[in-house]
Image (tube, rainbow, N blue to C red; front, side, top):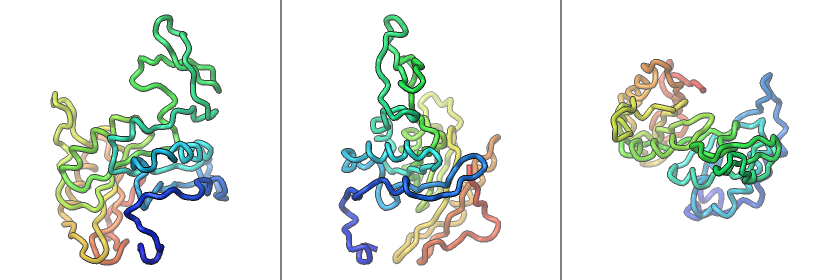
Length: 247
């Protein structure tokens, strides 16, 4: 792929423009939605080397509310500190107002609504057209990354178990008090997939089946997207009958 693109993928580079979504002529459905954008598929939206450019990308996302942006990261610990600070509606930064007496509040310029800064997170996040996800290839990464992901509000939290490299038990509690029902709390979508290409590492089907059953056996089942099995060729589908569900 590097040879075809004539680029060094070990280096993060800035795209010349981020405005392509503004030009897409996409038919809207009955609910006003215009499709989904898998963001930064060859890199990581929250990579530190992209900090200087991310605000521009957020602004394009804000200006295309009819598109749903699926942002997948291996760095969920960086999400909270690198969210947009502007209002989704007007694109302005809310200003501080002493609307709660001694407790300062945030005032949105487009609605004039004041939000208490003592809330868990100041508005205007989460944005309605952004899904946040993280990669969980093994049990280790599930326990490390999922608590960081769900610490940030989102319209949809999703997990990409791809490439799946081992069994994952989501019922291990991510909280020290043991009160949580497991790592699937606050998760709305799970992707399962194996590795592809030369020298691919095998995904055992019982690992994938274990994840599928954990998602389906919940009181509120989580949609599962069965992407591909491990194989030399990418997009080698799962056997017939495996779910391809959306949240």
